[in-house]
Amino acid sequence: MDLLQRYPALSDLKAKARRRMPWFVFEYLDSATGSESVLRRNRADLDNVLFMPSILHGEFDPDMSVTLFGKTHPLPFGVSPVGMSGLFWPDAERILARNATKAGLPYGLSTVASRTPEEVGPHLDGNGWFQVYPPRDPDIRADMLKRARDAGFTALVLTVDVPVASRRERQTRSGVTSPPRLTPRLMAQVAQCPAWAIGTAQQGMPRMRLIDGYAAQVTGLSSTEHAGYMLRTSPDMGYLKALRDGWDGPLIVKGVLDARDVPGLEAAGVDAIWVSNHAGRQFDGAPSSIAVLPAIRAATKLPLIFDSGIEGGLDILRAIALGADFVMLGRAWHYALGALGKDGPAHLIDLLKRDIASNMGQMGTKRLADLPARLIRG
Ligand SMILES: Cc1cc2nc3c(=O)[nH]c(=O)nc-3n(C[C@H](O)[C@H](O)[C@H](O)COP(=O)(O)O)c2cc1C
Image 1 (tube, rainbow, N blue to C red):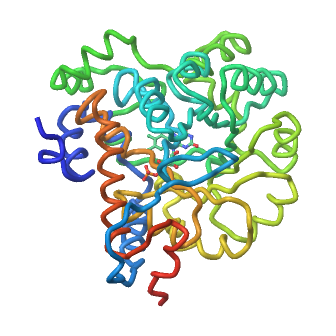
Image 2 (image 1 turned 45 degrees about the vertical axis):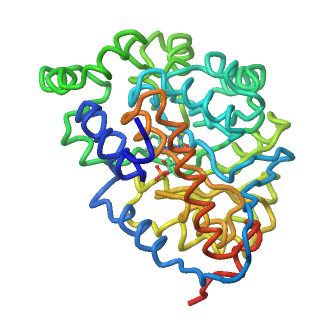
Image 3 (image 1 turned 90 degrees about the vertical axis):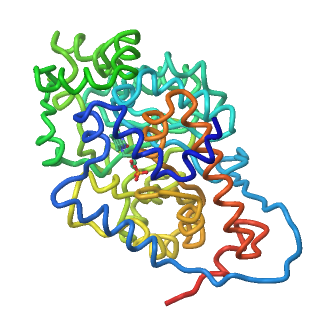
């Protein structure tokens, strides 16, 4: 089967994933909050970033590599942390970690993933980033950081754009409950998706394994009921400083949209800033990530990581042109897994790479650093 012929774009993978994932699972992955206007803004504002093509450059192989935290990645993108990743496709965390490692890309593991750092670490090769939703208890925090470090994770990501739980109305409508319960309605959806159902039966029902361990220790109750109690989702500057003191590798703050936050983050000693609106899952009144990127770029020399709404190689180039050093994708990897199972991530990497090469060819840009010169500035 020629994957390029059958699935030439991410939209083809998403359409197939929609059929192969139970409805409530797909809705959980795909939905944002409120009227989902942030999703539309992300798309519209990315589409409005235009480049002037350039001619007569002869044949060349564009250099797509980026060096970040002293490590050179052959391509400028990676895997964003996604909670309960293994719900979307059985064993998603380990499949994605293996594919990222093979391609030399960073892989982000969420605190609320369905696999622990120890389960995923052996599939990484120094390219793992551990994402923290901050535990309230300092001993649990110290233990979590130690476990992440011991499992080989090299960078720490503190997510700051989930200060309170968001309302995901579309998710609620699909029948997802918290804690999750397999109602007859959801069982009927599962029955229509045999590959997902068999894989999930083999791997065991996904749950937040890292949090589960601590929740039992603290309260004797299950993680999903107590994630809210255990994790202080709304950290403050004091918490950031404590985290800085407890981690000697690169520290990244994820979920920044306001350039006015930059001086405080620099003073706290962070190593990189991650511009993101969490794919519209938290706040429907937020601007698109791409709209705020230039002001944040102007405010700092720190490396900038970017995500939210990336759907192809051209979007990656748009973000880099406006100041991002590196670009991450969240849902796209899971659409790829849903569509093609374990073969999905490699196909997505291939698509993005071809798309980047083709667009760099059109612009006559041999290196990513040449992109800003091709921007049409409004
Ligand atoms: C289902 C789902 C779960 C997510 N869980 C987390 C998480 O646990 N921690 C986190 O920092 N970000 C989480 N994110 C946000 C992603 O890391 C990332 O910011 C976002 O998905 C990027 O946008 P994209 O999906 O359009 O690429 C989640 C996103 C989705 C879609």
